[in-house]
Image (cartoon, rainbow, N blue to C red; front, side, top):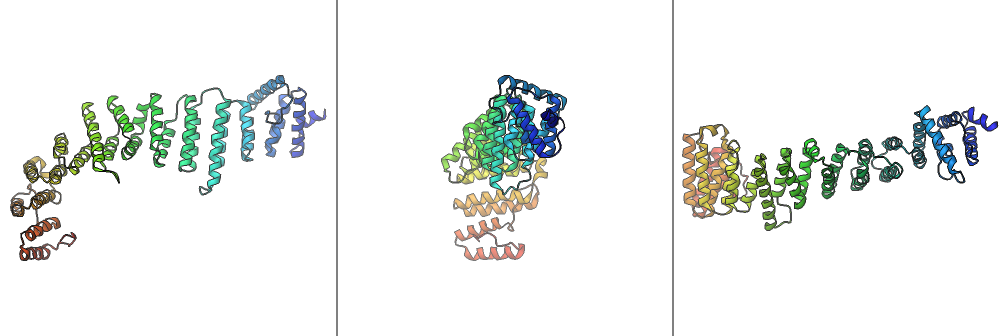
Length: 486
């Protein structure tokens, strides 16, 4: 009778609530199950006192159920379910009380007793919110919180037999990454993803995107690519490309810069063969990444990378995927640097008419300059002049831009030791530009042009004339003496 009175009408004093919990444990040890109303009173009183640890017998916590018959444990589980039906918030209030007390083990015992995915999800959410106030400089605290999140997920996977919703996946990944973007947190988040992935109804693509971005930021590109392959294995890669084109561009650029050719070719093949409309940034990032020579790489390595970029452009053309002009320019320039004008010409020939500019002509000319082929340089100059005379191209002509075509042509002649023809070319360009604004611009006020003129005169031992040209140009145009060669 005294025990029943204690259960039904406890005061708010913790001593009485603790005594009531002891009584429940004693009754369970003798195979006696208290009624639902009595246990509900005990639970609500414990929550009000903020001491949910006294509820250990109700939830079958470790160390409290030794010697209790199996049939009693079954009846106790039924009682907990009845509590949940009558008082839907009660078990969640117990979880909240334990979380506020930083009692993760007790909270896990409650979730384990309920064997509910929703309970674990709420526990994960509460525990994540509990750690948001921590300073990001507290490395030890953050490491412990990450370990706690991993423990909650492990416990849920071992306890709950059903498949998990993407909301739990999203919450776990974003919570870990929200703590700190260092490599340890990224590795922990990847580990959680790999554990949850086989049990997910559907993964959270935003969470995977965030995880991939964090992996790339932590210099873990291979892990980011593995995450993409996981999405691909689920048949959801179309959604990944359509919803996060910028991210795929970032991944492609990282793989290109780190020379992971196998992964890079796989991404490009998926795009072209499945006719996925990837973001233009992806193609540009991949091709430009391949054409950028990394530090400490040799000439042969760059050739191999540019061949790879060229192959991607060819596969895009076969699949009728529009090729970004910037990507074509990147491959052209790489072939130019390597002194392969024929390869550069091939890329130039595939430029759309509307994308043909002085920049493209300059890259093509530079390929012949690198090959020290003055005849090829002059041939490109003649073709560029013909193109510029077309009235349709007149608005695109920019004197400050097109003048470098003249300078490169002069450079090629000077390097060949043909300074006389370099001067003749300059005079001819000056006369043509004075007569027609659609001609290639040329002026002595360009410091590079002035440098070439002076070099030419000095090569012919015409020092006095070089000094006069230099002084007259400085006086007339006010050219700044920026080129150190002058």
